[in-house]
Amino acid sequence: MDDLEAIKQLKARYFRTMDTKQWDEMRAVFTDDVTIDTTASGGDVLAGADSFVAFLRETLGEVTTVHHGHMPEIELTGPTSASGVWALHDILLWPGGMRLDGYGHYHETYEKVDGAWKIASSTLTRLHMDFSGVEEG
Image (cartoon, rainbow, N blue to C red; front, side, top):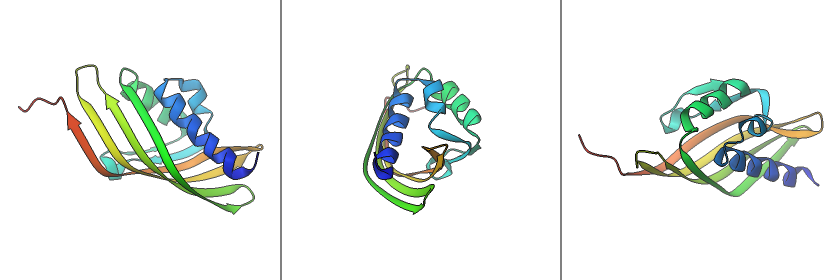
């Protein structure tokens, strides 16, 4: 498999393991020192794969999620490095009935570690968010 296809499969595994709550398998898609930046979509910056997966487990463990990544733009920047941008549509359904439909992009870097591609950094940006099922108060 070539490097571009391996990175596409890596990102597909990221989406699948998040949506199916396979946290241990999800941990394997990241470098140990991954940086996740969600400030542009109202979140924080998290450092380290263990911290990020623990955050997801706590925050999304009871939330049904559906993530679709589209139209990857991947550039190999060296023999063991790459960058990419993915269009994103995600749906989050909370147990209380709130729903988020989000639209945006992932801006990422990748590193090849021991022959396998890993996500080294990820920045989530949002173009639009639709919320429903939220009571006005």
